[in-house]
Structure formats: C-alpha cells, structure tokens
Length: 234
Ligand SMILES: [Mg+2]
Image (tube, rainbow, N blue to C red; front, side, top):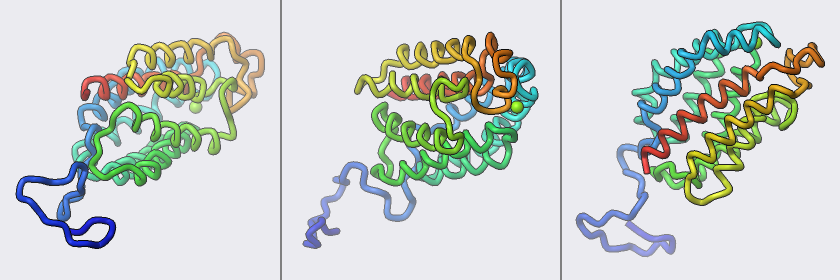
C-alpha cells in the first residue's frame, strides 16, 4: 500500500481507509437498492393507465405502455444491477431504458441515466449516495435531457418537473424530501396551463393547454420514489 507520493504506507489490520475500493470485488452501488428500483417500477406500472390517458389527450397515447415496458425491464435486472459499482449500474439501467422504452421518453430518460453514470465516475467508488451527491448526478442527467430534447423549462415537458425538483434538492445541503416532492408536484401542476412547444403535443398548439404533460407526470412519480429511498437511507 502506498500514498500519493508513492511511499509505502504501513497496513494496519482492521483499519481500512474510508471509501477505499475493494481490490477484488468492486464497490457496489450503495444507496441504489433493488427496493428503490422495484418501487419505482411498481409506481409506473400502477400509473400505466393514467399516463396513457394523459398522453392520449395531447400525444399518441403510448406513454403509459412505454414506461410500463421499461419498468418491467428495470425490475427484471434490479437485483443484479445493484451489486455493480454505481457508474456501471446506472449505465446498465440507462441502456435498458433506451432499449425497452419507446417514444420520446426512452431516449430522454436513457440519456439522463447515461449522463448520471458518467458523472458517477467522478465520485469516490463505494461512496453512498447522499443528497449532495444525488444533486450532482441529477444535474448531469438534467443537462443531458436538455441537450437531447433541445429543450428547457416552460415547454411543457419532463424538464418542468426535473429542473424545479433538482433546484429544491440543491437548495439545501440536507435533504428536504418534502420540498423536493412539493417542487415536483408544483412543476407537474404547472404544465397544465402551458402551451406545448416541444414534442408531439406542440402540434396541438393552444389545444395542448389544460392538460398535464405525461412526461412530467412520469418524472414526478419517479422522483417521489427516489426521494423516498434516499430519505429512508439516511
Ligand atoms: Mg407518446
């Protein structure tokens, strides 16, 4: 064992450096649990009809079905994926979402997870996901969704939930789960009066007003489950 200067360091039995990666088994993704993934999948499956109804109003009606397909795929790999190091786990989740969720949502949620995976590479291996780390990963994911969708808040998309919820999470070094949930819910409600300028709903112009955005609705559901899990893990 050596430090950064290359000098050999004494190794004391029973005294491991915090966050030191296991030399044989890579550190697993601490905080990303199968329970979390299964809870998010269950929430999306339960909301399949509601998301479908929302998407039928201003889109092509497939968002519930698409997210349900992704939810089943994610639930299927949940137990295995959480044993992997966080960057690898997030990358596998991203690829699974890209390959299973169709429509516009697949590439958007997929890009989000893949960007989070890349951001996770810069975190100490084996470090548990705490609120500040979640905020860093989430910020990378949100930027990827903006780039991929060439969009931002105010266009009646999932960004109208992702961005304010991230702001609520980043606003305090301690997780204020209630504030994050409230921001996601307010963001979703805020898509109602908006006129869509991105995605299929944009073709409807003014007729998109008065309907909640289905992507914002699924984002709010997922955020709620993630926040529950991070809160429970503290
Ligand atoms: Mg659709």
